[in-house]
Amino acid sequence: MEIWPADLINAPELLDEQVWDTSAIEGRPNRMISGIRRSRLDVFRPATPNGSAVLVMPGGSYARLAIDNEGYEVARHLADHGYSAFVLTYRLPCDGWAEGADVALCDAQRAIRVIRHHAAALNLPMKKLCALGFSAGGHLCAELMIQNEAVYSPVDAADGFSAKPDLAALIYPATTMQTPYRHDGVRNNLLGPNANAACEIARSPYLHVQPDNPPTFIVHAEDDPSVPVENALLLRSSLRSVGVNCETHLFPEGGHGFGIGFAPGRSVEPWPKLLVGWLSRQCA
Image (cartoon, rainbow, N blue to C red; front, side, top):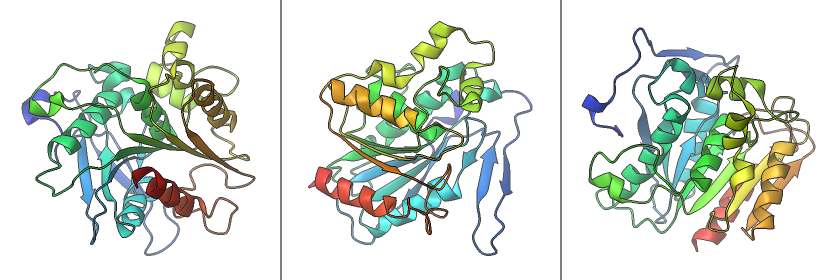
């Protein structure tokens, strides 16, 4: 599904979408996408829909998207359990878009609205809509949670719908742009290497939570070498301080980027089952 009218997208000159496979396992792709010119949704329909949907936002340090491990494989797992899943291929702020640091959030807000707008056509009652993000996609998910205002001007009837998800799930999310716990790649690709402290504070979601933020599910591995586990703990503490329901699972090992395919055999292996259990309870 396209999420924007074609005449609204003015891609930076010379931007060239690239897809490459980093997998070392035959028959199991692990593709990355960069240079994204068209933001879009890939739709995964369950055989027996349960009436709820999940917007899946892969990570990749805001420089690329891990579209298989943190996108399509996750969507298939959710569809197997009755959830209509939508994988968002979002534009990247490091590519020089006019929207700057807001470009991915523009796409995420628009995706939520487009899903709600087309729910009837998709035969989707839309009991609940959950935003699910990994790493930089987890940062994007956190920004969706806290943002009460649109970051773009309305373009059509879809923009009459709320852009805030009913639920949020964040897997090894980057929630701070500040030292000592930030991920330098996420911070620099989002804000640029010369961003000042005020910009870092503005884009650190854990500092901006509100009592009306949706119930939240967080997963993180304590041995994550890329996004320190403190990112999860900071967000959890902030959400609890304002009374937001927050289910958190920390695992001793799993590293970073385990997604669905690299979780088996590590202590993080049960996280997809825990997510489905949480969604089932929240969507009942």
